[in-house]
Amino acid sequence: MSFTKEQILEALGKVRYPEKNSDIVSLKMVGELNVENKNVSFTLIFPTSNNPFEKSLVKACEATIKALVGADVVVEIKTTGKIAVAPVGAPDKPLKSVKNIIAVASGKGGVGKSTIAVNLAIALAKTGAKVAILDADIYGPSVPKMFNVENERPTIQKINGKDMIIPVSNYGIKMLSIGFFVNPEDALIWRGSMATNALKQLINDTDWGELDFMVLDMPPGTGDIHLTIVQTIPVTGAIIVSTPQNVALADAIKGISMFKNDSINVPLLGFVENMAWFTPEELPNNKYYLFGKEGVAKLAQEKNIRLLGQIPIVQSIMEGGDAGIPAALDENSIIGKSFKDLAANTIDALNIRNETLEATKKVEIDPNAGCSTK
Ligand SMILES: Nc1ncnc2c1ncn2[C@@H]1O[C@H](COP(=O)(O)OP(=O)(O)OP(=O)(O)O)[C@@H](O)[C@H]1O
Ligand SMILES: [Mg+2]
Image (cartoon, rainbow, N blue to C red; front, side, top):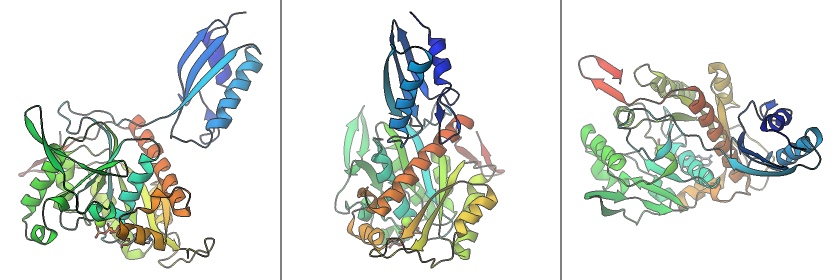
């Protein structure tokens, strides 16, 4: 007995994907379907790598095909984690070989942007993705220390006749920071234009190679550097980090307004609630809400913005930052799991963003008329 692709798709249309409460065909999770005699092969495309439903869904597909099409069908199923590709904007798009650029920002200083950016980069790389992190905090660079590469220096190589910066690497992640090139005390007396020019060079004159994700560790506030970044690169989406305190939340709202501003218009991927509660290492099930309970979670609900993750205050996060050994490296720790969830939700939010919205445009500033996009 022979059968058709349509029969297979009809059968697969009965298999539901639990996370979305819809079937795998409608969710476009079936790819590369081939039917030859009694052999069927296809790829199941999951929204994230290492998806928890991988095994059960493969079994369900096989059983459904055998039950509805024929018990003698030989089924071969490959699985893959989908990595979102941001829609391409202008043909002169800088960082063309980077699929997604994620800005980690906040309105307020010291809420844990760098900590979240570094650990998110590690957790994204653990899904098998190619990741880089760019420290855009010209006046207070902290990524080299958190990556334990403070004493390393990027090299320069001639590529196609042009001098290009080769990023430093550690833990499988490429990284650059203005901290490699200038003493932070010297940078403090720089004028804004010097700082932004230095940042532009790190973005444009570096051989970043092919990347699935570039994470930007943004400086605190909503100032010049932020404008430079959106003028220099098409940021795919922004993540706003806040602690649950009221003062931090007020600044987080300023952060949202900046990215949502008509002339900037960078999509928000969601919030991260950092320092959500304190958990002593020896009492992992106890939660103490030092900065108030669920402040960011409530704001997320109110503003209809996704909450991508809640990260507790844990001594190992702080110690890991100081020692240059990010806590997310230990996947099996509670904190490693929190960052794994954050990475999975970030990839999911990027997938939704890339399927529903257009490319982010670089912002062009007309000094006479304020901001406009091109
Ligand atoms: N969840 C956490 N648990 C424990 N310590 C944390 C946590 N998040 C951040 N920290 C610590 O808080 C301090 C500030 O964090 P971090 O430097 O990441 O903040 P930031 O928002 O990047 O600051 P800045 O605005 O200066 O750039 C660091 O010492 C860091 O180790
Ligand atoms: Mg920082």
